[in-house]
Image (cartoon, rainbow over all chains, first blue to last red; front, side, top):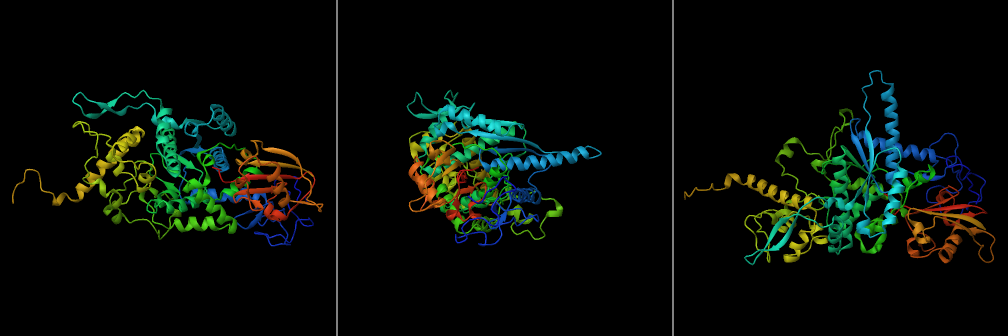
Amino acid sequence: MSCMSSEADGGGCGSGNSCSASAPVTAVVAGAPRLCIKCKDGVPAITVGNQTEPMCARCLHVSILSKFKTAVNNHGLITPADNVLVAVSGGPSSRVAVEMLKEIRSKAQNDADAAKDHVLKVFGLGVVYVDETTVLKLPRTDAEAAVVAIKEIYEGIPVHVVQLESVFETESSLVHENGGDNFARLQLVEDTADPKSKLSKLFESVQDATGREDLLESLRMQAIQVVAQSQGYTKVVLALTATRVAARVVAATTKGQGYSLPAYIQYLDGRWPVPVVLPLRDCVARELALHCHFSKLSTTFVRGLTTMTDPRSSLNNLAHHFITLLQEDNPAREHTIVRTAAKLTSFRFNAEVVPPSRRRRNPRNHDTSQEKSNREPEFLCSICRAPLKSSDMASAVGTPHQTESVEQNEEDTSGQYGDMKSTCCPSCLFQIFPEEGTQAAEKFLLFPKTTRDTASSNFHQRQQWIRSQIEDFLIPEGDDSS
Amino acid sequence: MKLTLEFGGGLELLFGSVKIHEVAVPPPEGETKVTVKHLLLWIRDNLLKERPEMFLKDKSVRPGVLVLINDCDWELCGTTEAVLEEKDTVVFISTLHGG
């Protein structure tokens, strides 16, 4: 083919080649010289970046790095005092995230070394890989090969490998036990079941394909948070691109998650013990994959749940496919969707720590302190941590614990499934926890202890808050005046 | 025409988990040139092991699949009408599962 290139950053289509000029060119005017639009050196372009700009590999790299640094600096995502943990999957997005952070850190290290007083700090860096082979039911050899590949790719920085089933480890469980007086009760017993089997049981109990993916995502984050907390990390980086965020916007809309959507798409997500940041939110998946290829950044493909299910059976997959279709028609669609969704009012846990010099004068969607103090606390879904609307938790107030076939031991007040169902978002209730009655009681026991404890805590917090709002109108106990 | 084909981003699963294929693609009947369009049809008929809909859509690649011809984005080379030459390298990268 005439578009010969001898080097990744120097070669490419140039004039005098036999590329068909009559073919539809989406990004470059036919017949125009295909030179890098950024370089002043007349370097041939080898790709199309920023939707429509032909550019060379070096300028593609500079473009991505610029967007990354702008996100980090303008939104205060990472500070020199931070210890940053990047969640990696082997794919190009997380690979690029780590490379960008290494570049920034390297420069910061040079500045720190050159500083006369040697007090400049440099942020720490590590990566975490969650081994999900238990739910994927892949051969153990595949899992081991993936881990080896990940460690090779990220050689030189700490690599933490955690099994997804670790969210079940070292916990006691509530089990049904027939008491001597002929009613079943919930008893706390030492749990000897294998975490893998617990995870498998939970997954197999979820019939809905979208629900499985969403459950997997929340368990994955729990596992990452455990690593981040135990290893002293202060920020978790997710390599979510504009492509993924746009797909999430579409998927959330179809699932009726409009209220909670803003929580997931901001640069900072403070719902978790270790805050999560999205520094690649302004980059599209396409340019990151191209950058990995041109810069010869090694990646590895690890099978995931999305690759092993029929693409049409999952709302998440369908949304992603829809976005790629849109992108083919108009490369700017992903950014348009993300920009539009970003205008939704975010939550308090999305508030960024922005340097004074970069604060906007008229923030569009941040509450004033007066408004903040009057607002009710933000309650989160026990499974996916989606913010809950008041109406979603209406059934939590005064609902008797539903134990139709399980008579309640008076002393056992923890872990009732009714607490959990009343503190789940409608999407999780529909996809993951639709059971009622006895089936719900059994399903409840399959969730990790942290999830059950969170549910109980959420339920009681909600009750306390409601009580505080109506305290003035409550009749004190013992007051029998008419 | 001898070509080197590379598949990445999970596409290799559709080709027997083999990433690099050295192939010989004959030009279509009555023609002397091999275009990317013809190559895609040849891949569908001779290399694809399963689920063609994950790689192809109509006479082009499925949305989300990047194509590079000698390390040059095919969008700059005429996409499906780009003419291939002897010993060219064509890379297909899926962005559907990257993370």
